Length: 374
Image 1 (tube, rainbow, N blue to C red):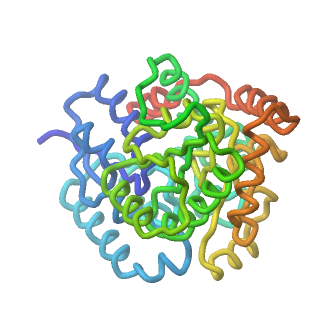
Image 2 (image 1 turned 180 degrees about the vertical axis):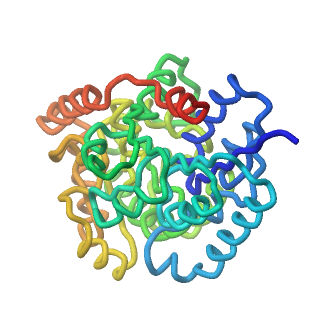
């Protein structure tokens, strides 16, 4: 029987990063059987999926509690498979709510735990660091400042580089695709990939786009979605919406191309904000969640910013419009500043350049694959 390796990536961005590692690892060890939790990218690499990211990608305390029995069942399912298949190693990617519960159970079973993309304990819970040290064998971090956090814990930590740097560099060398823009002046709209993000954020984004269109009549807008299931959900919301721009298209699977061709973007907080910055498109960050989740987050988060671009830069490079501040009027006003030559754009581009230097040039997926192989 071929040796098997467990991979758990519960969200779309983690699925992409994990798939690159699997790709590199297979070059060295093609006979390894990969299985676990992931999405379309891991599936395309031949990983046998127990659960898909479409079901696993839930964010917010209230939202997670509603699905508590489902996640408990998934944890049980994974551990039953671990007992059957007896993998030597596991690659856990980000997704701390689930993976930090899974890791100690794997450790008990003698499975080596390699954790790629550290939970953001520097933002919200440094008390978790000793517990992480107990159940993780090797932590691979994607921000240089994270290594220092774990000094003295006994946990082996390596900065492997940021996976987006290599991916975006490769993408920027590709030929542009033809996309169905309806004018030369263009704004990208990225409402997120989770069901509750689309429900809470997309209506405000559409209203903001309509307000922008009234001020700048020759604008066209494009929404980028990661897969057909989310595209369908977005189209349903657009169909029901009374407040939306006239020139609007939805494309699937080409988010980076949409970002590259846009003059400016409204982006839901998450990995997409860092992608947009590395591509070089001026953008604003927007986010809305349930009132309770927001209150709880504010009470535990110890940092000033929520956007990765601003956190890594240690200053405000991109405007952050959160909760009540993410009104259509405010979103339209901030985006309008990015559509004309302005001091805001110059400062943002300088910030992007500094951000790129901070992240370095390491090939993250290759380094993670090598660590796993070793």
